Length: 155
Image (cartoon, rainbow, N blue to C red; front, side, top):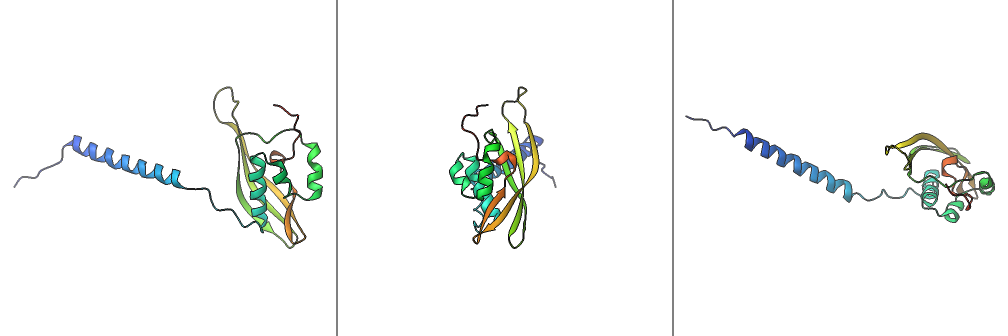
């Protein structure tokens, strides 16, 4: 009785085919994923999510509606726009009766890096929120995410 074995070239072709199918399936999965659903806007994390979305989109008026009057009044001390390439990820939320802290990871990448690499910096920051008239409003915004900046500033 003779045993037939597959040639090394045929095994390589089969292996490459399987790898190709896996890569294609991974790409389809990654690109077909939509954005995650918004967090409930009645929660501190939901308020921060909406503020950050508006701030990163340059919609300062929309972002300002999530700030306490005091936080809106602190806008004059910040002199620059939010850096392009800023990404924000939710880390945790601590909620008390009338206050809350939402911790986020802020990652800023400087596209002007002369060496072409990802010259940026990550950091953990915290938003402070207060309950005002049964709604959460942001009372403290990390400096990297202030949407209330001076219009005259040009980098």
